[in-house]
Length: 421
Ligand code: ADP
Ligand code: SR1
Ligand code: MG
Image (cartoon, rainbow, N blue to C red; front, side):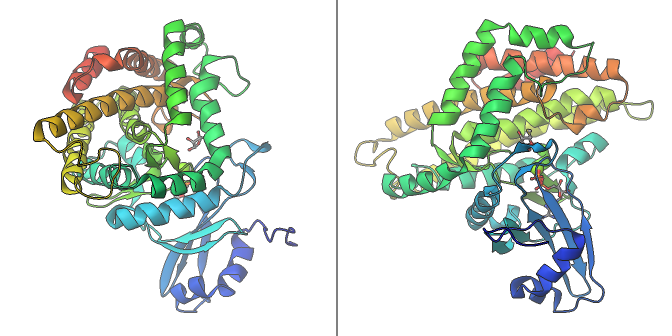
């Protein structure tokens, strides 16, 4: 296929091989042996094309962004330049937390194409592991580490306002992806939209109730404004359980194409909100040999541990770098221990409330918006699925409206248990 003027051409399994042969940073990864090369397109995400490339002497993954949203089709155009922001965020988050981000081997800006480490089996997408009922004993430890480091080191707690503004300006370029989130998370679920769908007819009234809930709309407006206006840290921007790949002892965060400078709670909320969805889906996956009771307890424990470990690690980084160049709380002003304690407590309390708000908004969009989650979609009995979804939706509405009343994560877990029982 001929190249476009901008040097872009979509690849397929065949043309990718020619591309690899002509690209030293990729061909060298395969020891320049191409005879036994296996290339397979595996993209099961919503937006892009992902190829696994395995040769006798090495392997990698190639991800290419095309100028539209894959799960909808060419009728929904989307900036293919999202690949630039994904590669930049992978590099930046990878530098800050190398143990939990796949290494980038190659980036071709014109081709909107990233070459990165192949997270080989037994790595699987966390969402699939949660549906299968697998426990990951290090998940909370690893995800709290990833979030604490990426969010702390890209915030004004660590950086000067000069550095921060330069980075914020760069990521403002990812405007189309941010606008997609604005639409599908903060707008469409609250109005009639051609893209919305839900388990009908079971949830018809529930979806309508969301569209007519003034108190909910007031809260969502506040969150949308925070999402659009608060450049707090370099967030992943789409940190659901489909953006994490896991084994028993490895946790890797992929797919930060929605990255931008936004509120920290948007990432933490995405992750915890998706764990809450996984929790409410469990009854739909229970069967005679496994009632999923113990597994549900593990999910709730993981929610609690993730937040508590995050808080511990984030505030430890803050203490460690208190006299550094971060300009949010200048040490000349905030130098007495009592005040420091007060500042940290106030910050973390606000962050928990933001987390609950964004987490809840992310739950609602997955039940009555355009893009649903496999946790529920894989429950074949529509009536059972709707019951699970309704409990999750009610939980999300409660969290969104009452988020300011929660002082600690264990109170949130108790509230989730109450709605479930
Ligand atoms: P999208 O941007 O379309 O959501 P993802 O980045 O989520 O795409 O990738 C889609 C799928 O490709 C993932 O669900 C996973 O199965 C696979 N995948 C993506 N990156 C890797 C990787 N580095 N190693 C192994 N598999 C990967
Ligand atoms: C059309 S919305 C597609 C969704 O998939 C991505 O993973 C993001 O969550 C986006 O909102
Ligand atoms: Mg994805």
